[in-house]
Image 1: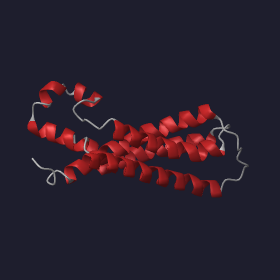
Image 2: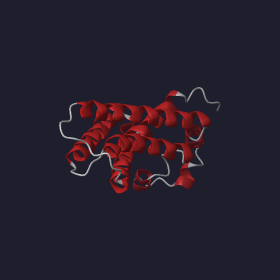
Image 3: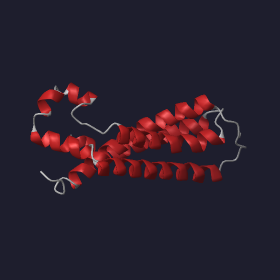
Length: 163
């Protein structure tokens, strides 16, 4: 689990995904202002809403299944129960929303900065399918940042939680 929380691994990984998605978006011939500004805003916020509604459970994901961890077995462990309850707490949900908002603001700021130097005219029409597709891509890349950020938050707040 340590590797998935290490910012030296996850920030470059998610950052490279963002760069690829941004490059694709700027090269896509049908991109509009809605796609440029909407997708980087909606994607990370959708991920934050997902983690706020469906709290992160590191014992129930795909990688836990690959490692052979069974949720029923790990949930009998007091430490595992404590981590899952901390990740499901109100404070964790608030942190998830704040992280998603910060993630969105950074991405929209980067796109806005690039658009300042964009030479060709940007269409104003709304292409819903493109907006949803790019928002989905940004959402998936945001999971690589926000999931580990939630785990790091939980480990920082571990001692503050009553046993």
